[in-house]
Length: 91
Image: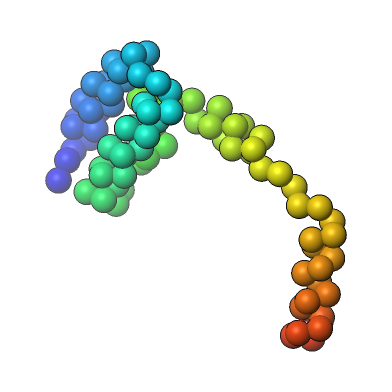
């Protein structure tokens, strides 16, 4: 089992590659290490590790939210009609 000292050492090593790699590739590499560490230790804090590796957590959330497209109202109305017809009233 890895220790906090190991996690810190790995994040220091990985952060050296942030400026020389494509940002998407760097993120994927850091996430792969983070997943491995989380499997090794359920108490491992992935968000703390990402920050230590120089990943902009706020930027990731902002980007993810900007890519979400709201559904048109017609799709929601269709779902309500299906529920009312198939299962009785949903509320």
